[in-house]
Length: 67
Image 1: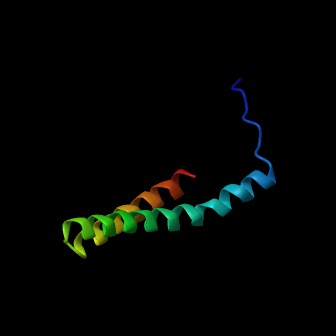
Image 2 (image 1 turned 120 degrees about the vertical axis):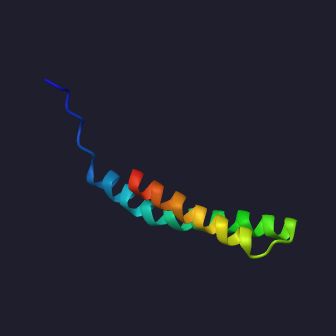
């Protein structure tokens, strides 16, 4: 017989559910900030901002699906 995982407490489940939105928003802003910084450095506005914002969205959704 396989060992069973202990069930997570309600408080732990609520904490994990509340962090989902935070992961998505923070990853989008981090991607945008990196892109904006590189745009300022390389004088390529708005191309890198858009690309890194999309990378941030992808990273955020990846983390949401992982949780």
